[in-house]
Length: 377
Image 1 (tube, one colour):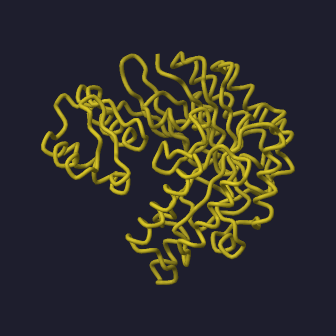
Image 2: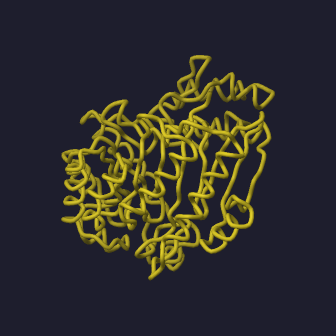
């Protein structure tokens, strides 16, 4: 039986970061109770419709769910427990901002057992440029606060930032690796459409690193993390050991089941022989209304065809170090992968192909999307 995860999207943020293209809204004076109640009801209806039980992960993402007090998070966690049952070792992750560190202890007491801290940078000038509200000192303080709870700690950093050079990135990464964390999510800055950064870039006010500069920073990231024993088990994610890997994100990359609730959340559920993709209403008011009227907050419910499911399995599987199961992808496609492409990609050392599984090489990770397109062509 495929493992089950639950993703809860809390859409509110104190400020909207200029690089962010997630479904987020500025937090103002609002009562969180109606949205919490709608999310809990949505989880219950998902469980009734799809008969999914024994969740191995619960991911509270956003947005900024660390704005919620412990008692509010407890209502969401208890709702998931009632709807799905949480396994004895369920990973309960909270995405959080450093400025919310005073709440970490009560959030851990509510049931959070993994803190994912969005530090993003360790110098104040970069943090201001990224639109962050915290400074470097509070980023370090927040990691210490999370560690004091005795729970697992993951840290997010962004690199390939404007004016960032390899020496400065090395220094930041070395600082991160010296902290009491077991997991690092290290993302290259991407200029997404319809963001403030995209508008600045269009006006020539934001200099992006060249492809070669970004590649050099990526390779430096891998070498530093490897030297410190943080294996790159996914293109952007590194863990101290296998137990520290993000159980929830592995569900995505392995093509397993996850329920998506909260405004704008996506889900993938295999039910009655079909792979079902869901997307919730994006605006909180519309989401609450949809749950009240229909039981679930969906904007879209779509049955994926085998070709779509195969494409997802290939694209997502290539991201992780274990790669994807060739037989499974070919069975979904109803035809083999491109044999000529497999041959030349292997000869160029872009993939590792043992016949049963295909994985990206270190070199191939720089060209992941292009490799996927060649294999599927």
